[in-house]
Amino acid sequence: MLGAILIGAVAALHVWILVLEMFLWTSPQGRRAFGTTPEFAAATRVLAANQGLYNGFLAAGLIWALLLGLGAEGRAIALFFLACVAIAGLYGAATASRRILVIQTVPAVLAGAAVLAGI
Image (tube, rainbow, N blue to C red):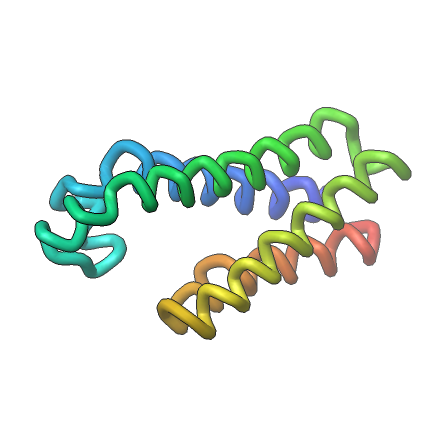
């Protein structure tokens, strides 16, 4: 099912964001991903780790939905967490970087559309 594949991709993306924000924030790879300086990364390390934890919760919710399957219960949980991802992406695009719209919101919306279409 395409919906399940897309949900898995969104979940994997959020696990990767968790890793970047919680563990690689001050590394060259983390700074490159978010366009930060070494000084800014060092000063915001704790805040970034907190954001990473929230991204992990989004991934956990999506994985929970996949484990339940996309019957009524799993579908409702998937749509809830995909909506959370999309809304967080809209907020991030409005306040931090427009790139977030493409990286986070678009995949969540596509996954939600696939789930709603039953494909």
